[in-house]
Image (cartoon, rainbow over all chains, first blue to last red; front, side, top):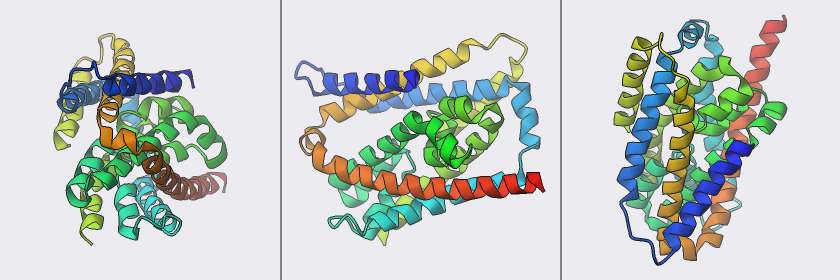
Length: 199
Length: 90
């Protein structure tokens, strides 16, 4: 929990600095891309350097291969249902935003391109919120919905940003499932977002 | 996006080659990078007037969609979890 609060504080300080007039504009997009590449390289190193994880890959329960599919279906059903509450948003708007699965950078760029900056901003915030909820509520999700819940909730982020928190609360034996899940859901993001933006 | 995945795959290879070395610094480096990424994201949001001026309206819609998406997926995860554990008991 303390770790999550520190993360939120960094985000809030970033907003304050970004909105101040004294701030000199920097290209944070390319900076975050390099940071993300480095992050992924290190996540890879921690997987490759741990021989126990490689062994656990073989003992992966075949039913857990279904988890990414369940996350995608559950997310789309949930997003479709809330479109009835949100009068200003169409069904495909909500499905496109939901299809970000927490991958806020990519999904918001795609949606801005196809549906404009306003829905792009909704996508950015909604997918940040998905990641933040996963980071903050991982322990509660494990308690009430089982050890797979923070992985499902984390969506496409479960092989990078939410992996440490999942490892902490679901256990180290779920690292491989989490990475596998993040990998598959991640790949589905551009395809599903474009699909729902074009129909 | 695929470049990011390539970075992870090359990291796995490097990590495997260095598996006998002390790699305990990696988890600290990962934490610092997560802080950096969220800080940069904050700067991006804070610097966009279109977002900051309508944040309250956009935010409510965003929260509702997130909650719908998360609720749908964790119900699915719960069903799968129950199915896996039922098999273990029998």
